[in-house]
Amino acid sequence: METSVYADKGCPSRKVLDRIGDTWSVMVVGSLADGPMRYTELARRISGVSPKMLTQTLRTLERDGLLTRTVHAVVPPRVDYELTGLGRSLLTLVDGLRLWAETHIDEVTEAQAAYDAR
Image (tube, rainbow, N blue to C red; front, side, top):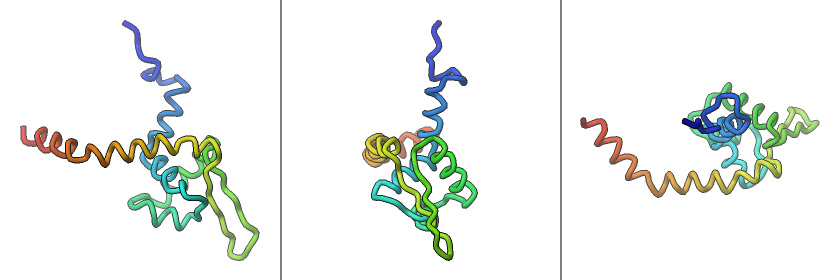
């Protein structure tokens, strides 16, 4: 029986899918769709994310080449985050996920209720 390459933990594609499929990564990419934002703007926009998780997600996305971090030499320091071309290429997928979730939320909620009622 052949195993899917995505199931192989060492598969490079799986590593990328783990990253871009992460809830907070999707939220950050979607939030940056309209342009650069400061950390505090992102934290306000992404409800429920802890400061530690947001910082970790931003660093990882920067490392992966999906966003840039620009530090402005002002007092107090100002840092902006912006999607790179590679990061912007994810917007179609992220928007597709959002649209799918909005379209099918009733069906998912009904399935959850039916499952929980068993």
